[in-house]
Image (cartoon, rainbow, N blue to C red; front, side, top):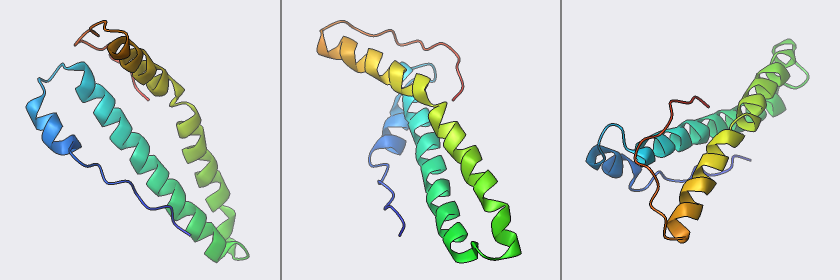
Length: 103
């Protein structure tokens, strides 16, 4: 069973309105990358279920592991979001510049 993809909603429109170096631009782009990896994981799991006893099914677990590792290593993204949201809740204004970081 596939997990329904959450619609990105206003993200594309918001991205067009933000300056190129805006902190939220980076967070939104990271979020979209994570959602794409989750979609990929869903598809791989479905593919594995269909091919589990076939020769082609042997390579799928490694691909699933690769996607899962990427998602585990996305923790810094979640920590950055928490710092931004925590600052917004406390009344502090977060910086509009984000350090260059990859997932």
